[in-house]
Image (cartoon, rainbow, N blue to C red; front, side, top):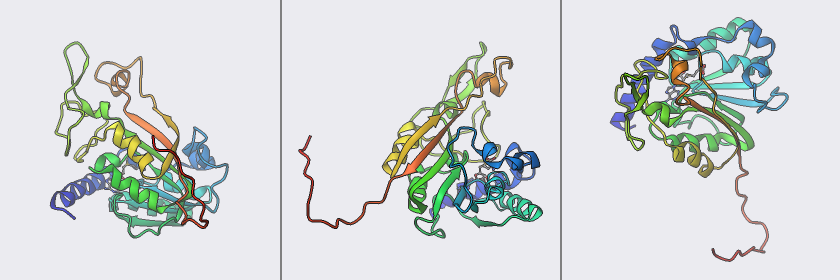
Length: 271
Ligand SMILES: C[S@@+](CC[C@H](N)C(=O)[O-])C[C@H]1O[C@@H](n2cnc3c(N)ncnc32)[C@H](O)[C@@H]1O
C-alpha cells in the first residue's frame, strides 16, 4: 500500500467509525422496512422478483441497512467495509434478528479475499468518492461478479463536488476544477460531504466509461432528485435545485470471453 494510500484510508476509517456512532448512514433497517425488504431496497424495480438463495455483496455498505434487508429477503449476504464501527452495526442487527451475514473489513479496491465470479448481485451505496481510483474498484467488482450478475451503485456527481460556496445572490459557485486530481480541498460548502472524510472527484468518463470498460453494460441510470422548492437558500434541498448530488446506475456483467472452441473466425473489415 502506498504511503498516501494508507493515509486517506486510515482517515476515512476513523471518520466512518465516528459516523457509526450517529449519522443518517448508521440507521439500521426498521421492522417496517424489513416487512417489505425488496420494496424498500429497490423502488425502481431493478432487482429480480426474489433474491432468495442469491449471493449478494453489499460493498462499502456497512451500517445495518442494505445487509439486513437483503438477508431478510433470503439472500446470502457478504458485507465489505473499511470501518469496523460500521460493520459492528451489521453484526449487532443480524444477531438481534437471527440473521446470518458474512462481514469483511477491507477496502473496496482490494477484494482479494473474495473469490472470482462469486456474487449474483453487488450493491454499492455512495462510497467510491472515498478512493482516488474508481477503475480499480470496478475491476474488482467485475472480477467477483458472475456473468449476467447485477451491479447497483450510487455515486456523487462531479458537479456537486465542484461547488465551493454560495454567493451573495444565492448562486452556487463552481470553485473546483473538473480535472482536479487528489484529495478534495476543504471548501466552504460542505453539503453532501462527510465530516472528517477524505474525498475524491470522479469525472463522467470515469464513473460511466470505466464501468463499461471493466466489463459491464449499463441498463439504467437515474439522478435521484434532492430539489426542494420550499427550502431556503443554504439548505441542501435548495442546493439540490441547482446541482444533482447523486447518480444511480444498474449495470449487468457481460459474459467473460470463452476460449475459442471452433476454428472458424469472423473477420470484420477495419473501420
Ligand atoms: C454512505 S456509507 C454507506 C453505508 C450505508 N449503509 C448507507 O446507508 O448507504 C459509505 C460507507 O463506505 C465505507 N468506506 C469508506 N471508504 C471505504 C473503502 N476504501 N473501502 C470500503 N468501504 C469504505 C464507509 O465506512 C461507509 O460505511
